[in-house]
Image (cartoon, rainbow, N blue to C red; front, top):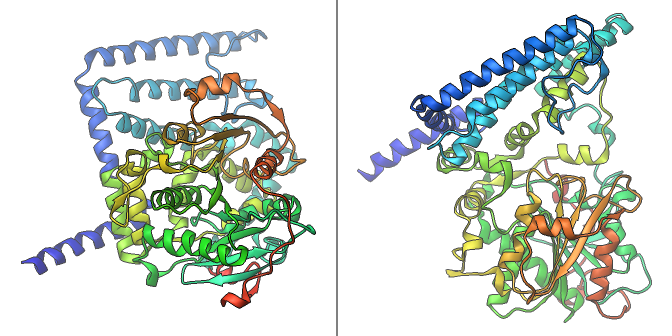
Length: 577
């Protein structure tokens, strides 16, 4: 009987995995559930229906008045509606001329009406409301007049100016992209960047390797260094070298030049054989093995731990476990765009519920891992105007390629995530929020962020869609130590890669002592002074304040402790496809 049940479950998983290939990993059941919730409650809300009918009439009247004013050729015609601040599709002056002013105003009014129709309905769950509003916005964005030649005055002007050559160039770009996709070749321009040639170039050695990580020790750039080494734990969803891009914007290079010994974890790109690696393996084989290796090289010196994104969450789990067990090897912790409370984890929560997680698990069950390319669609949908439609228009209708930079090249260098690990990550952290609620178990016993006593430096970014800074700020509610919080301009990646001299960068910063009263994030934002420039110097000043006097740099590796240099940085794992 059990065997029959197992066969039936496997059949269901195979079916779901097959469907996922055509839905980008998004669960049709989750979307249908949200739609049913919205539709049933709207159908049983005549008051809301009447309100929507009234709004439609008023918007139609406003549009008719606007058309009348425009056709009378009055220069002072007041727009019916202004785009949202982040919507730049209709900012060009050409959109203010007839008939394109009428076209884009009609679209914006229609978009606003649908926003009214999908929100504010009593009885609809918050997540279902967010999903329906999001899905409706995606559908409307497909039909934006900015996406089509005949309804986009900028495209018409460009086409007339070039005699249609832009469309020919766009067609060539389309054919080139299709050929690259079919041949599994990198995107156009990506071949100008290569790890070890013009990316990840800071000198160093791989001094430790296991089945999951390589540990890179970077060469000292100063005659003396602080005795406390830095161990960086990057996210494993992408390659580590976002923190060691080019020479001018490498955080690793910057830290070595400020007199620190820097170690970096480089994660293996897992395959089918790694399907059963879980969160416990990433903590033990990743963070703890790296800490042990760093301690062998640097002796009794405590460690400055730095974690970025998922790496910061894992570092927090490791630090809380060490604190629980009396392991005091951390001098400080620094967390970049990393969350420990996932109750308000931003728009990604649109894709997190039982139905969606189960669907992803079935997809990963078949192939043994989740390819980051399968997640790329979800991230792009969060900013579809910028990451999908504007790029399609620019490449295929304007006929111009956006020049690829080092950060964009890194973003194309995707990785995979093991089935077991990603399932546990989604369920235990995102879905159940175990870490913040004291339910996260390590070795069968719960851990608590409040056990961490090392001072913490936290960085949030203003435009982060992955780890919203309000969510990152929640570390204050869970901690029992001094917390320095810094909010920088930029997004999840560009806000962190913010080297000195980077234009248009600013930040706010303050330290909250462990016994101080809690300040909510919006009040904190209003109280803090703005500082122009990069936040990196603030980090190094803080690290220096928590470090001892400089000493002679340690040896590369520890040959006497059976830790010989294995190869030059950037190592071998980062080169895995």
